[in-house]
Figure 1 (cartoon, one colour):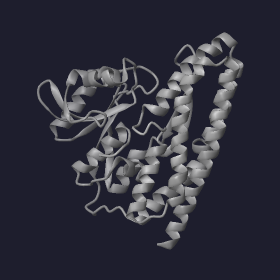
Figure 2 (cartoon, rainbow, N blue to C red):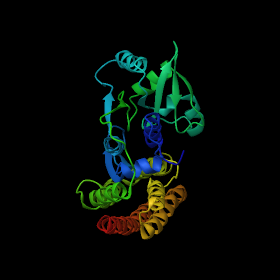
Figure 3 (cartoon, rainbow, N blue to C red):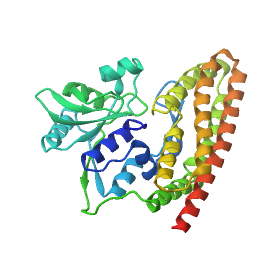
Length: 335
């Protein structure tokens, strides 16, 4: 099926159900999913910096370009029972519905990832029996059933960050036009994505630079004992965010490289970009691996090494996205 995260796998599955065979990597590229953002989660006793390597609008962009409307469901201000009734009603109407859940409550995922909460997971549910839904989950080897009670528990989880808040969606057609992946679509998707990544004040390169400064500020402002605890939790969480949320374990950089390779196979020219994104992919994987070793270093060494990591990755992000933008612009002019 290709490599992606649970969201991309679900999007690819839903589009295939509508007659469009698009890989998760291609979904990521067409949806302009490449990104970087961060925020400080203050709901815990210690501040935790959360980073994301993809945009939140990827699937919505993708469906719109493919001629579908993403109809969102779920209401955090309603009860679990009310949200469950809404989901059952949609499934009874033959909709395949993607729902966000805390993977802790899904037994097979808890076996795979351990007993830790992560509300960023999603899967697709459809036709049901009295007590179960049919399930498609890109992280599980094949479609299987899941108990409705398990789905309800996963959707209602309040664990932060990434609390599901009963979020979900299904797609419906907006047009009778035939969708086709061509060079123009691919070049324009890369151009728009890279322009936003490189120019937006609140995300992308600017956010990556701000993240480094924010991280430095937090570590310098905390007393040494508290800072040690903060870094202990933070390093483990960064490893999870970089390596566990998608299947290339590279903070989505490998997924975008694979998208560029698939675009090249269709006739686009991203030769230079592919080489740079391959280097970037390896660097993010190396960062995750190196973070494990930081626990043996002193506090000042940990801070210094982390800042060095971020400096290095910023330079590589700048080079790779600049090359992709340039090749996309040249490609558009050549069509």
